[in-house]
Length: 209
Image (tube, rainbow, N blue to C red):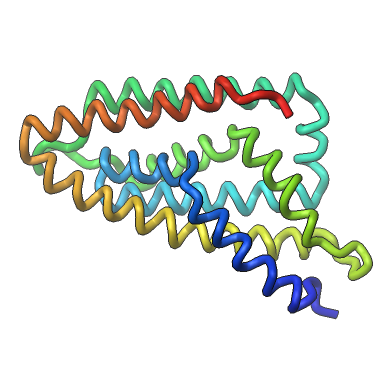
């Protein structure tokens, strides 16, 4: 038996794409990484977020996310780890800024990937979203609960990979061109640091569900 009913899958794909197209923390993070490190860093960050989204779906299927969501103290610890890390990224972006010339090495894709993965995994909203949205499409009568979560998680991750990647690459190409100007480089430094700070504030002010 196929783990997911084809009609359910057809209903989930447009719903998932609509959610991917909604501007959120993941999209803004890819945009900021693109401005800061260029297209390669943006794509690496995009991949990190996609891996994180798939991990959340797998964890939900295993019941681990439900355990975290049921313990407010653990959820708050995860949230404040994310806030602190985003503020650290904001400080680093303000201090170094986008690359002004070829003599300064760009942000390594591996580093951008790790940063994005950590930010995604420490965002309780993603955990709560997966718990609220994905189970609506899971059919216990078909059995194989975990494979269903994995399929839906893969769809969400793939949609986000394409959409966030396009946003990040555009921002990266724009940032590289503008970074040759000291004035624009300074503006990009403030913009990138501002995005990270705004994401940290958004996470810090998140109301416990």
